[in-house]
Length: 253
Image 1 (cartoon, rainbow, N blue to C red):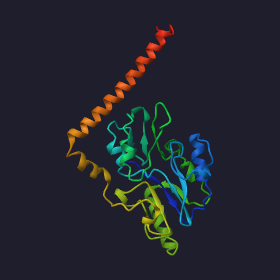
Image 2: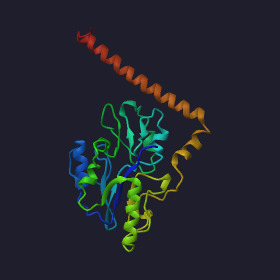
Image 3: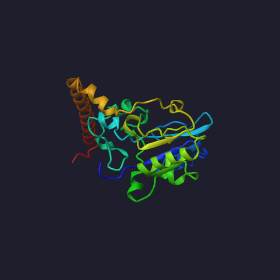
Image 4: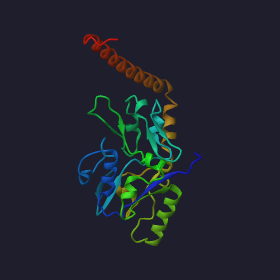
């Protein structure tokens, strides 16, 4: 990718648990509710704050350098942008939810309660980025516990914080190498296995996905074709029903 990669650094040690980041995200998306009750992700909460031991920790899309969600999407509704965020285009989505199953961090959420559901997740405030602004959550953080910027600069900042205060930080930047690297990085006071994220290798997951799919091309293609056919039939049925309704109401033109 030619453009500079950006990302977020979340520092558990510096986080005061003020929930400003959650409020800022909800306000930007137009979501209502009590930010302090958002302890897990949902279709109306793209980031959450929970307590791990004595420290608060944020959860959000990691915007993987090599996103498995994008690699399994048969209609390219999910794509890795040039600057880092993994973006979702609802108009292309066929509702297969492969992305939800493929994500190693259990991030994407589905709008189960809507007649035309979509997948929802953080887009790292891509619209704000285009205006030269940081993410809403980073702008709202009073402690620099959430920092937005170029990924290489965030890595340098993270390692500098560890070096300056080794007694406070576990010597590891979570996301620097895991599954090929992520655009959202974490600093913690103890090993990553205790964060609830799980321990992951350094190999990008899409390569593992392809190793499996390449051995069963017929099944993969057949499944994708079946899902597309189902999507087309469903939409066609809705169009027909709408047209018939117009005829019954005398509004056919």
